[in-house]
Image (cartoon, rainbow, N blue to C red):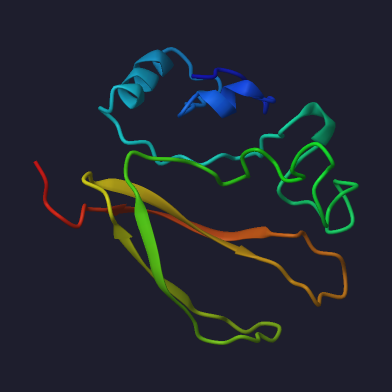
Length: 167
């Protein structure tokens, strides 16, 4: 469990520890909430609101960077490590697992002021009911001004029962 107020470099912790609970600044009842997650009494579905860097050499690392900024090695890895963050904005785990299938996009090109409809089937593949945070990111590669590499355009937290009834 990590209790802090900002992204930190985790180094060997991320390599050796199988799961990390990020508690941020949890307040008076935070200990009880974290205990519920650790002992499996609560199934977490939260997502990171920031990115965690692999090392201090990557700072600043943030999800809304432009293609030309943020890293000297945008198109490739560094000599001694990968260029991407350790944990991306929007990353999160749960005791449940989900399968995304049948992605459908009603149009490949969209004009200004047009809507696009996107759908996906999501199945709970675990033995436990859970919640998933479905996230939609976009990238405008032909914009007349520089746009972020990826931009969160929408999300929805949904509750999905396990597919096979278990004990």
